[in-house]
Image 1 (tube, helix red, strand yellow):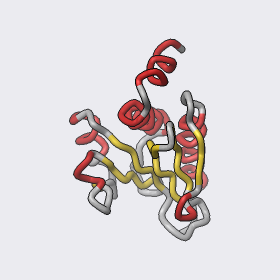
Image 2 (cartoon, one colour; image 1 turned 135 degrees about the horizontal axis):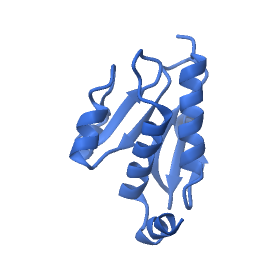
Image 3 (tube, helix red, strand yellow; image 1 turned 60 degrees about the vertical axis):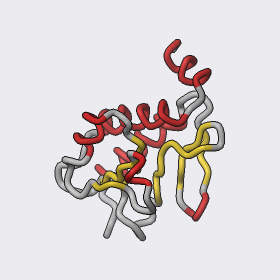
Image 4 (cartoon, helix red, strand yellow; image 1 turned 180 degrees about the vertical axis):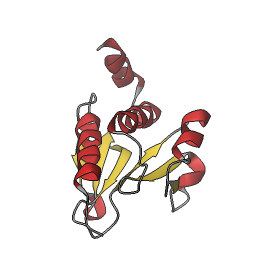
Length: 126
């Protein structure tokens, strides 16, 4: 599946936003991009080479946000048992995929679920 320009722009905005959060760093375990804080993943960004559908996976503890995320086409609880802990995979190439702004809100929520309090306090102070 070829990566669409619109999906790639959303992915790039979400990635840039994630890496701009206090302590946010990018690593490539398993050959995929992830954003980490304090050595813990807060968003799985996957790959952009077209070998897998473009998407992001975030941890949404807020029930309303979690339920909302699952209403998007192709969105599903994450595999490997992560779905039970609130992780949701959101494809970006589907028609009706979430906006970049909404993705960034979810990335921030995921960050807040994982980051230490001192870093979320730093974010709140911005």
